Length: 393
Image 1 (cartoon, rainbow, N blue to C red):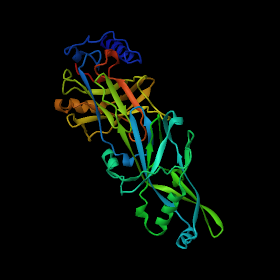
Image 2 (cartoon, rainbow, N blue to C red; image 1 turned 120 degrees about the vertical axis):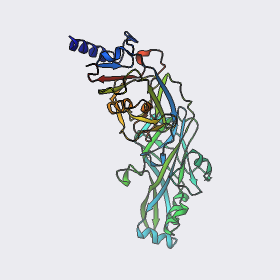
Image 3 (tube, one colour; image 1 turned 180 degrees about the horizontal axis):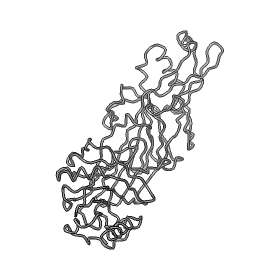
Image 4 (cartoon, rainbow, N blue to C red; image 1 turned 30 degrees about the vertical axis):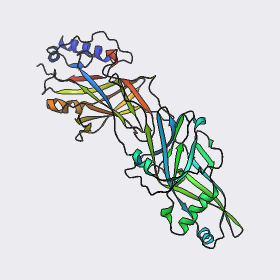
């Protein structure tokens, strides 16, 4: 008879984890009941829980894409240094003052986009001061020196896969001469500054992720010398982007995770009603997505990383356990966190909660919003389901 009771309870709890769960049965279990069942979920057992959204500084100098544009409350500026591949004949023509640049243009291969790309507008300016991608942040951006001349000399041609535009010939010629004369350090790159009226953001391959140099942003210069025509190409050699975020952090009725900005969430469940030495056979976490507030671009975000927290006061994660993954099915994100819950139950003090972050945190600005711990409908709050192994023998 007991086996039938457990099967019925298992069906009831799993049925309560549907995309539109019913609130019937909430709070029906008390702490003494927990020892007589084989499965518990935080909704039916009425576990206390809390949500805290915060912003983590992430290293955008190692991002897999360079992002430029404005979208919602975000502004992203891209910085790129270029290096030419020059044949000996071109280098010799420079040394003999016989080289002329007839035409210069840039091409940016688009691998991510969000918003109305037709509104995308930016200026291209030469960077005058030295910089490196290591440790570069928003404060660093305000400290660099620029030539305020806009180097773009044509309209910006935009498609879903490529952005191209002409640039001033003197600009390309100067960089070619610097490289030939072994003055590469004077080629300090350019900055892409998005302009007002823009309601889109695009991303193109960064140096760390490009399959080959042909996939990188490129500067082309058509040159003439000794009666010949040739085209030389400069490829990006250093790149990064810096995002300014004017979003305010939401309360605990929402979980907000966003790429590019480092928006993460700490989630905590009170497990004090479960014996510290309880043996569990499995555990899973379920989040309910807010499809209205969630925004994603040409690349979707269908996964969320989950880590055990080491110290919730410093937002540091416990490195002794691997990240776990929540996968999307409709508006539900669900995944197994068995080892994390077992770790918590080994000692009361170890339950510092979970840290949630979006997968591919540095390569786009997708935003996932879920119902939080104080959401008005308790049935849609984060749900922890724990499978216990015969603790009532």
